Image 1 (cartoon, rainbow, N blue to C red):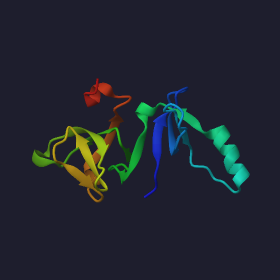
Image 2 (cartoon, rainbow, N blue to C red):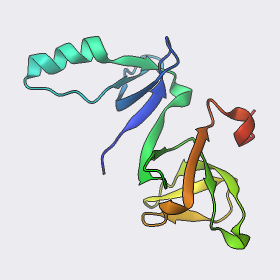
Image 3 (tube, helix red, strand yellow):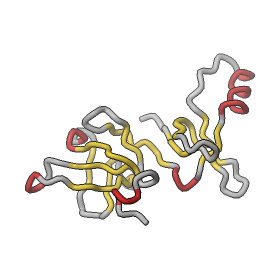
Image 4 (cartoon, rainbow, N blue to C red):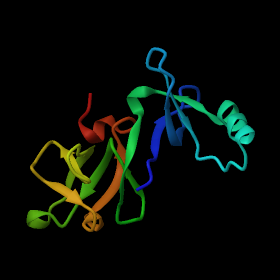
Length: 137
């Protein structure tokens, strides 16, 4: 699995995707979009020009799964899951499981999802841009 992170740029509020860098100076986090490096100087130059500071509260890691529309599912995404018991829609917030390569959901329902069942999910937003949808205050 690739380790991909996303976070909101502190200056533009745009989503940045790539490698997470912890500057170690008071909680500042940066994301370096996945570079195409051909030499060490090129990589160093890219780090200084392309690295973006992101809001630490918005950082989420890719779970390794994609939804029914082939959209990457990140921690903090809001998903609509159908094909559940009683064929009802359920809105849930994605939380990464620490013990296994599966998704857990908030509110915790005892329901987990592992690779192979992601066709039941559709990403409909995230907790940072859609607070009303998720119930987060």
